[in-house]
Image (cartoon, rainbow, N blue to C red; front, side, top):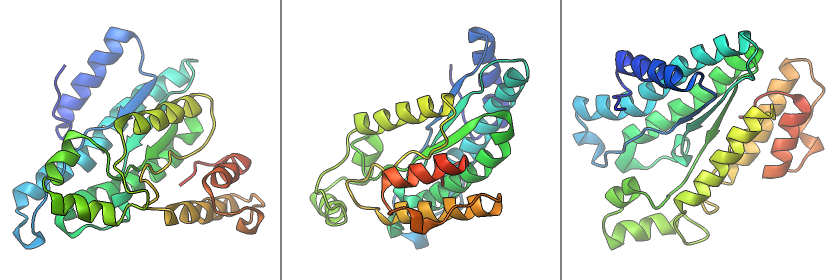
Length: 240
């Protein structure tokens, strides 16, 4: 099956075909994405539309189409589904040569937060993974010379590129956690480059809990990954 995720007709046709073939849709790994490197002043409207169309609009259309099936399935008594979006550390970490990519991933992270609240009443969990530099074809296309590799390693404390299997392990954990009704957000796979995201996630989750009338203060936990998940589980809200 082929699909241009930036086209709603193709997305809907794909999702309907998968649901018909398998009888239901239980999991969405929302992973389509591209990056186009270049000088900010030289980014064309066509470049902008292509990156945002696939990375952000595509993520929205695919999530929405699958969620519609999952809601109907849940209303029919089936166990609620799980959605895992592929964000990036570049949702916050800005890189001047991939401005459109950074914009799109910031949108994906907000899409994850907003849709997780929208779909929570149906029992559908929406999580996100925020990888750093991972050894994929996209990475090889962007980091194409020794100078570029040196720049990437300069902001990577562990001094190495991540492997796809490491992302897949978190993806599997997120999907299983979502199916088991454990509210959490997939971690950042970035070799230590984005530790500040964890503290932000702790604080934001505590704020959500407070607005929902749940007694939860950030002083109760240290800002590390396990404790961030503990806050979310104790408060029973999607973690950001």
